[in-house]
Amino acid sequence: MSDFVIETNNLTKQYGEQKSVANLSIHVKKGRIYGLLGRNGAGKTTTMKMLLGLTSPTSGEVRIFGKNMHTNEKKILSRIGNLIESPSFYPNLTGTENLKIMARLRGVPGSNAIKKALDVVGLPYKDKKLFSQYSLGMKQRLGIANAILHDPELLILDEPINGLDPIGIVEVRDFIKRLSTEQGKTILISSHILSEMALLADDIGIIDHGVLLEEESLSELEKKNSRYVHFIVTDTSQASRILETEFHTSNFHIDDDYNLRLYDTEIEVAAITRKWIESGLNISEAHTQNDTLEDYFKHVTGGEGIA
Ligand SMILES: Nc1ncnc2c1ncn2[C@@H]1O[C@H](COP(=O)(O)OP(=O)(O)O)[C@@H](O)[C@H]1O
Ligand SMILES: [Mg+2]
Image (cartoon, rainbow, N blue to C red; front, side, top):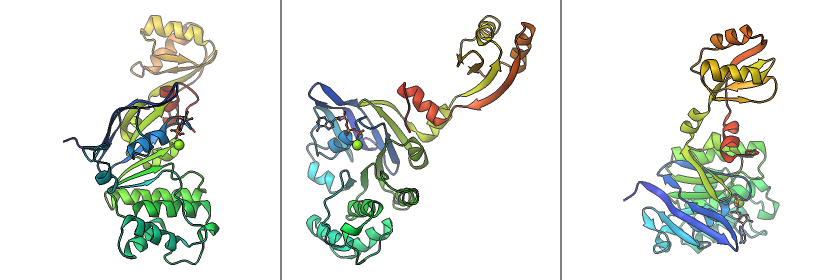
């Protein structure tokens, strides 16, 4: 049996000519928060819908809890909580009343489960406020409370922090973390916000145009953040020629006429500047920097990067 709570093999969804998800193989480990990161339209929602059997894959396989989703759907779904599209709550009922109906529909006994779920997301139990009077943040919280009502082992949350205000974001992030650390839930969460994923996820899968570009633990990704020396010199083309001929490296990047980034950090900076000065160049700056995660994502997605 595999160690993964979710495992997909070459999962593909094709709409007409377009592959919204293409040969996606992701691996979500038990007890971890896995962040599916990608721009709008990258294929995150489609992937989650296939995981939950809400839309059928064109090809490929979904395995959850080590079992084939297709042939074990009922059993598997009872162990998953999800927030994909906003659940349809009744506007003229309170949050607690709405959850009571949801609980009954799903066969969750007792009001204790409702109390507990509301408590996790920081909503009051038996509050008088109607759902129609809820702020977007409260609606989102109620959606998550609904997802955890039956105490599922696995949570699948599609962009749960979308549209929240900054305080709401911090709070939702905190209770998602607590669900993982205190209750050992496995959580798959999607976002198009890189900085948010960096604060929340243990593992990250980067998806772009339906394709999984990277799958790595956050700490590995952060290690990959390349160090470089940033030079400002009077003539980067001459400077680069010297790097090639004298130091036998081509691991650098010329930004413009004056700025050059050297990724080959084995070479002594003083030796380089000495050679450059000897050949008549002036150097106004030389310092070591790290690429940010953001630069890294720009690099792997080959474009504008992700917010
Ligand atoms: N029902 C559908 N019919 C046709 N195209 C769809 C459908 N659902 C999604 N798509 C397309 O699939 C791509 C991925 O969409 P989606 O999974 O919603 O991306 P994300 O959630 O990452 O923003 C988009 O180009 C979208 O237009
Ligand atoms: Mg989406």
